[in-house]
Length: 186
Image 1 (cartoon, rainbow, N blue to C red):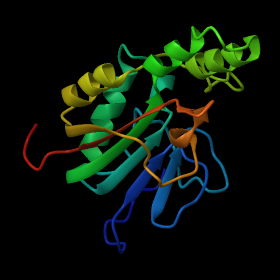
Image 2: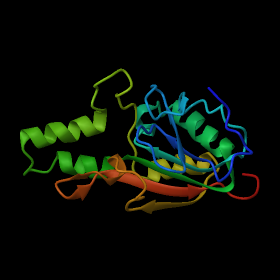
Image 3: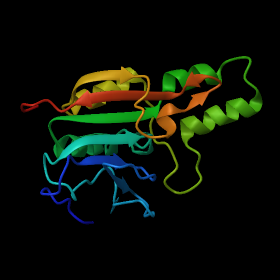
Image 4: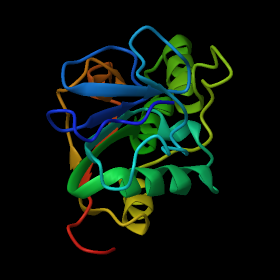
């Protein structure tokens, strides 16, 4: 995996798990692809030096990691590579919303099946299984433990056309959170 050249112009913005290009953003994905700049995992961002990334965006990838150890390792890696004051934007399926949808008496069997797939992953390839579920409180605790502050829920990021903007029957199913690496030590 190539290192980012710190002398390159402009801020470094990293989209973890992305596939579609966007000007000003570099993509890291576990699977190679035509627009993937770095092949690797969210738990190992060793291609990036400490404090060299201005923004990190992760859309619906952290639920694919074990909540016992992988999530904290991945969040620690994001924290490590972000510069002080850097922004981390993360979206995961909102387990509170999905549970409410699943037990809704007016949902059809097919709609419940789609909600279930959102909870457990589409299971279309070896990486498409969910190992954890989050609501704002649980995700916020993980982010705080990793050192992030100014942890707030946002409706949409408006950066990429991806699952952070996904609605089910007009209801947003994504828990979108923005947080900051503080300027001082954690």
